[in-house]
Length: 272
Image 1 (cartoon, rainbow, N blue to C red):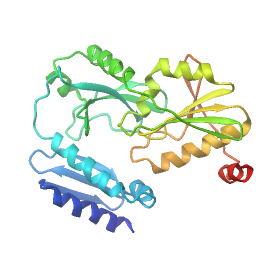
Image 2 (image 1 turned 90 degrees about the horizontal axis):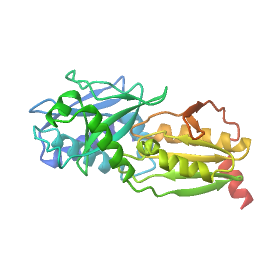
Image 3 (image 1 turned 45 degrees about the vertical axis):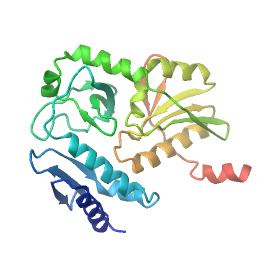
């Protein structure tokens, strides 16, 4: 399936949703922009990255259509009651836009040299990034909003999947709730993981829907982490960074690793 057929399949399924929209395909950037016809609000999907992932996941097209449909419906003119709003912090790459298409500035806070913190109102099936006008509509100060978001983040459950490769332990957080990468802001969680590590603790957030923590006990562990980060970064619909961060209980420091053990999965299987 090529990029054009992929785009057409998405539009075809969107047309079944009884939603008025217009689309624009950027051939050079290979992105699809879908907007509401009433207010021009919409979202942009990076088709090239999505197509790579779709080749291994046949249900991805339906997921993309569902996400677009829910997002556009939420972009209708509606009031937001701050008493009922669930606000969470979300991590984005520093290259992510700092304002909306119509020039409204998002609430953005510096995180690392590679990442920034944004804030979002959660609607269960989708969410909306908070800009200055939306914050005013919510009648909240920035500080109150940040406190609320961080408290909500701490209440999110964290389930871990562990994989051990050549004596190195890797833990994956993957709830697919839109806030997996955001859990890197949960300092209590990071410190708890640090207390369990025997080697150096690395943390990776290659895209929005996964957080990887590595207990690197030997040099091979760093190579494996580098390869994992590149793979997840390439597959993510909302990529963040392919760099890992070393965590020492105080701050996150970027780590540059040149992976060498390219066939670590094969070696692991051979050992078994």
